[in-house]
Amino acid sequence: MAPRVMRFALRRVLREVRHVRPVPYGRATGLVRDVYRQLERDFGMLAPPVALHSPSPPVLAASWAMLRESLVAAGETSRAEREIVATLVSQRNSCPYCVEVHGMALESLGRSSEASAIAAGRTIPDPLAGELSAAARTELTAVAFAFHYLNRVVSVFLGPSPLPSNVPDSARAKAKAVLGRFLRPVPGAEPGESSNLLPAGSRDFSWAAGNPFVEDAFSRASAAFDSLAVSSAVRDVVTRELSTWDGSPPGLSRSWAAAAGDPAVRLALVVAKAPYQVDDALVAAAGLDDRELVELVGWASFAAAAHCVSLAPARN
Image (tube, rainbow, N blue to C red; front, side, top):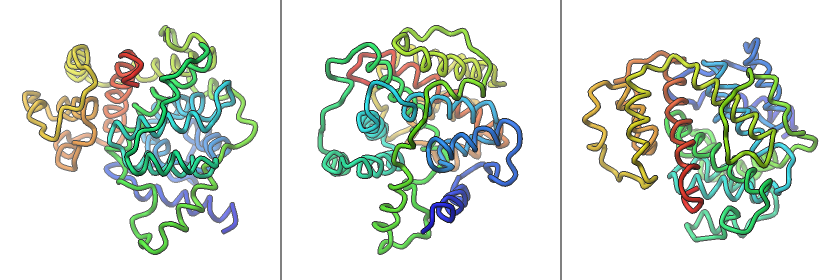
């Protein structure tokens, strides 16, 4: 399939997004258009985990800035090392969509042994657990942060696989091979080029001091999330719950979140601590429109990701 035809087909995968309607590529304007163009240029495709944020342009830009400057932009660490961190974090967060995507990316990079091991649930070395320079640790911590964020968002808005639901089992292997080619690194992705998408931020990310481009991107993203119209009730309860959370999954029951009377607060809590527990009923009960839903889920996911990287390195 020719690259242009495949790119058009990948744009149609946005129809697989649940609960909200992403802005179609052909109707994108302003900030959404700018992010879409940069996303296709630097990531190789209109990735649904980013594009689904389009009902809220600032959250779209923030999610792309975090992904671009952590996973995509050139740096001291290799793309394969970053993909391993992305896949391991996704595995810990029970996000099969992201595990499959980044397993395909590892395959495309010639790291099929690691991809097969992760798919089989076996342990492989975590690059973040080794001896690293300050710059390398910053880059890989940024990847962990971005995927703690994206895993939560994907668990709410996407299904268990990046392949469309109408792809038959007999064609999945071939479809994955084709999609994997689009996940190879795009040459020339210089760091810092997402900075023009969002206003400057002022938050100090001490873990990002080893890379000014990463620090700037995450500061800008943080400012975007801080500015959202998320209720003080949601912010207060989620912040309080995260302050004493050790990062361990709370289990399969949602009884721990039942005390939150407000459905929007309950949804935000589950997104933050157990995104694999989010279901259609929980989302529907919150009664939010597309922009409100993207912003609530995005804010809770960002708060949880920030908390996760503040824990011991072994929990990244």
